[in-house]
Structure formats: C-alpha cells, structure tokens
Image 1 (cartoon, helix red, strand yellow):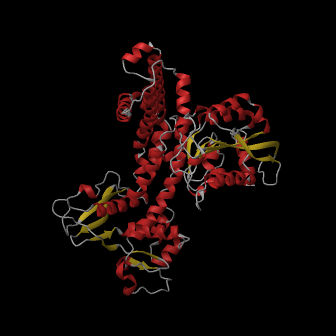
Image 2 (cartoon, helix red, strand yellow):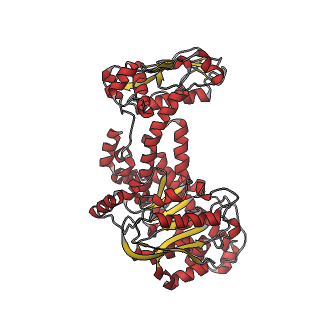
Image 3 (cartoon, helix red, strand yellow):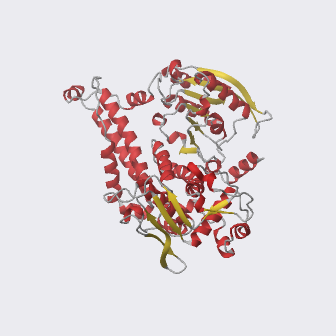
Length: 561
C-alpha cells in the first residue's frame, strides 16, 4: 500500500522514472550470492560491506544488502526523501556521474528498462567495485557493446536468478522477465579483503585515461604528485574573488559554475599536453603514468576542494551539533567527497544532512543529560516508586532509574577540570560546558556569538557566566554559571527555565512524558514553560539549510533557523 501511494505521488509530481521496486525474492537472491562469494570464516559480509545502488528508489535494497556504508544515486527527490537516514545520496543522474572514483565493495542496479543497456554499459565499464549486480531484461545477452566491455574488464556475467514482476511480492506488477547478473570485477582471492576495490582485474580509470588522452610519451614510474592543498587554496580564492556571483545566484549555484569551469580547464590542459610531440615530452621527463596519476589525483582533489568549501559554509547546521556529533557528521560527509559536484547532488546530499542532523539533535540531548546524571544531580518523578540510595551510586555505578530529570544545581566529578595556572580549563570540561550551550541553543536559548569555554580566563573556584540572548526582553541573560576546581569537580547552576525545558524534552524523548501536562504533574514544571518546552528541540527542514537556494530564499531560511 505504501509503495502504491508513492507511485501515485511520483506520477503526480512528474518523477516516475520507471521505478519498479526490486522484490524481496530478487534481493534475497543477491544477498545469498554476496554471502557465497565474500564470506570469510563465520563473518557475514552483509554486516560491513559498502554498497552503491544506482537508481536506489526508496533505499530498500541498500537496507537489505548491508549494515555498512550505504550510497545511492537517485533522480527522484520524493524517493530520496523516503530513504533511510543511513543512505547517502551521492548523485542524482547516473549519466552525469563519474563512477570511476566511487570506490565501494558492491554496486547494485535495477535500471529503467527503456535505458537498461546504457546503464549496464556505464556501470560495468566504470565501476570501481568488486562485484556488480544488475537486474536486466533477458535480452541483455544480445547487447554486443556490453559483451565487449565485459571482455575488456576481464569479467563474465553470471545469471544467478530469473524472475518477473508478476509475482505476489511485486509492489508494481509488470510483464517483464529479468535476469539477475552477478559480475565479478576483482580476483576471487581479494573479494573478502577489507580495502574497497582491492584486487580489481582492470583499473577503469586507466582505460578512461587512455581513451580520452592517448599521451605520446613512454611509460615510467613517477610519484610524489599531491595537488590537493593547492587546489583547496585555489577554490577558496575563487569563492573570495567571485562574491558578486555568489550574491547573485547563491553559494551552491556559484560553486557549481566555478567547478565546471575549473574541471573544463583541467581536462583542456591535459589534452593540450598530450598533443605535444612525443620527443619533446620525453625530454621534459613527462610520461604516461605520470600524466595519468597526476590527472587522477587532481580530479579527486578538485571534487574534494569544492565539497569541503560547501561543508565549511554549513555553520548554521553544524553549529547546532555537540563536539562528538559534529565530528561524526563531518567525518561522514568528508568520506563522501568524491561525489561529482553539482547543484542536484548538493540537494540530494543535504537531504541526508537534514535527516541525520535531526536524529543527532535528539540523541545528543539525551546523551548530555545522561553524562550529567549523578546522585546529587537527579530529581525523581513524583510517581517514581524506586528509592535512590547512596550506596547504589558508589564506584561510578549508575543505578537503573525508572524516570528522572536533572536538578538545576549540578556537581560533576571529572578526572580533571582545572589543569594548572598555565593551561586553565581541561579540554574535556570545556567540551562539556560548550555542549550544554549548544543543546540550550537548540531549545531556544540563543547562544549565537556568545563566549564559549575557551574564551574565558579560568581559575580554580572562580565563577564564569555563560550567556544567551533573551528574545523576549531583547537583553542578555545568564544561561548557566560554572565553577571549575583543581580537585576535578565542576559546579554548574542552570537557568531554571532552561533546566525545565531540558528535563521536559529529555522526558519526552525517553518516552516518559506524553504531554506537557505530564511534565507539570511529574516534575512540577510550570504549565506555561511545559507548553513552551514540549517538542521544542530543534528540527531542521529544507529551509534551515540556507545554501539550498539563492539570496531571496537565503533570507527566509536564515530567519527560520
């Protein structure tokens, strides 16, 4: 039923690009083959392999094939939005993507049948994966160009199953008999090795380079080519000098224009080099391997540089993350920077950002409260039947508490708080205090531009005030007071309104509070604060990501944020 509704919506929105959802029996056929070919000892490869689904639809195949990294190329924004938050969209139009640099263990595709030949040829020809799985009509075997590409990749297409879309598990019935092809691009002995694309029989980049550039110089080893830092600086200068275009069109569109200009120039430079006389190239010490390696690094580095420039401008999103979750998010984004840079791909990837940030905003509030949970800091719910005893908290233990919130006066016993006169506050203590300010910001206490822990001068026992801008009065107010001591303790006194909102949202997320009235009854939170607090933790929408559009929508997005 859910798939039928999605299909109707796709048709209504003009986004039905022949989406025929892969059936459960087809997915099981692929899963069994992966286990057969990639298992080592008793390990299940589906627990850790990386998979790219070209034409991923709602992401059901990715969820079934791996618990590891899940990457998608999908054209429909409706289907992208329906994918699980773990799925990273790395492209929208397959024919506009460079699969050569997308190194994964497995590529899967159930392509549009009207275009299956072009999709199959591109995927097999460019894949940097160990195994490729295709769901294609039986007439695939008559595609002579595909057969040549398979031969060039030193691979064979093994039919591991034959199915149709009239089976009971088909969400969208169709009279189409299909083969599932398993294509092995890596040597058998390397299939279960950890490195992505390790042991490929042929390197698809070398083939692409030779077809497009055909350099005259002789082959020889050449190393130490690392243009990444220079390209990063080049991109920053491009953005700095192109502020008029950024202001007129928005950052994403400006970056896309800069990227295409730089990529065209890069490929043009290499084309002109390769047209030089072979004797002259030899005298200059230029050779095939050096050119190929240099171009490969520069293409990858150019993509990385533009994505990193985009990520550096996501401050209105990442500033709402605590230290640990910010690192997790940015590491994940940076791992995906070999994606081709385009406005469409930015929209797809930022859909993933929005989904995951919303998950992080809740999990980090829960994590923060649990980090500060100690006997002296806990207030039990009025309906709690359990009694907390001092002994239950000894030796760092945390007893099983049914339901609780935090006192507004908190004492934390850390390994270290004040280092000494030379280094002041410890890094751990500083991170914790900054995380409190970040979570408060997400609850509506505006800490933007306010001092953080590293901005204060810390002395043992000296009170420091963390502030916020109260939009009701238009004046700054104290969010919390903090004192750090050389013995390792940190004393915190929370703004009582902040403590009430923090406890209310913590209880709601834990499932203990179902309504604002519950917060009033269980923790004596004033009803006006309970109503304001319940469900108040930040949730992103597309409007919060100001980079998604030009200047006019930028202003709207920034106001919403």
